[in-house]
Length: 92
Image 1 (cartoon, rainbow, N blue to C red):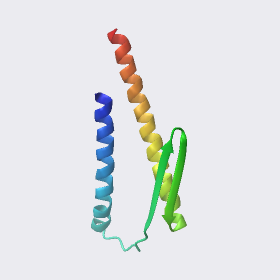
Image 2: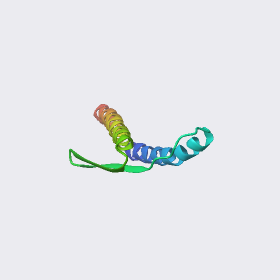
Image 3: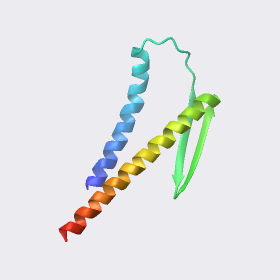
């Protein structure tokens, strides 16, 4: 049950980041030209499939950000599952 709640919190944090990014860009008063693009990664078993459309510079940073977020979330999920496994062993 705890792992489910952690996953749900990660999903909600992702939605919050997506919603806050445009608002922070508007508040910053920066005179930056807007550039659009889309990137994504799908992981099937252990094989990541990444794709994107837009300017190459934007795609590079987008794919890099997604890769880092996936690695960090996988590390935290591994730590959490390890701790939950230890708790079950001590409870027996």
